[in-house]
Image 1: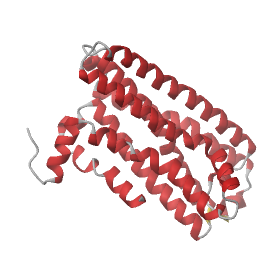
Image 2: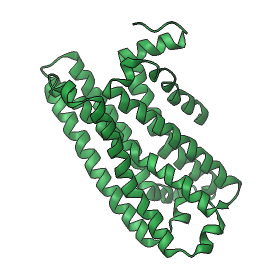
Image 3: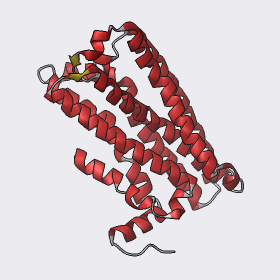
Image 4: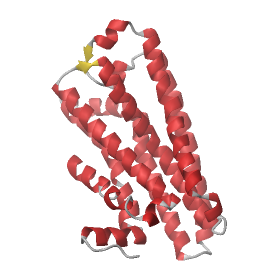
Length: 275
């Protein structure tokens, strides 16, 4: 299942980057960024998941892997919120869409996404460096966030950050959805399709938010499966938090998008791309 998801998710990058229609379109630029980000996140999470079962590793190496995984994990809901805004502008302000959503602004928006995630994640490292002894970073431990970033201040900071993320992203999703919903009542078929796309974004964000309630989820699963927590619960949490949210992206822009579907079909059939 994990291998199939990685293969299906990474497939778009094989031909998106070769077609100008995609990498010059802000919507697909955000999508390409989302796919690459999710590829990195899933690859790292798989590696960390396997390492946790096999053995302990050096804390310094684990910190690097965890930081990258945390960056990419927090990028996903922010990227989805930006895609929802782009869709809202395309439907509600079609005449200004080309002026507002330019390639340059889209790239700056991606920089902002990474900057926001960096400001959220790096304090965990700084607090750990300031509070843990030097021997801690030379020791061997299981590579889990709660084991490495174990300071109580980090936990409180993370909870506050997740709540802020939750509120902001959901406000964006709800606002764009209902504005598009109003427009779709008297507008074209494209507006109605955009409304459904925003709804799917909302479902994907809901699954991504499982990351923000991961501790509660693990506690609940521990109560349900007290005898098999180590194996069953960790694997279930991994599937729910990391795999399911990232399985929807290819469906939203692979199956539903006509342009994407046409080029993907030609790509899979090894035909020349239409001009």
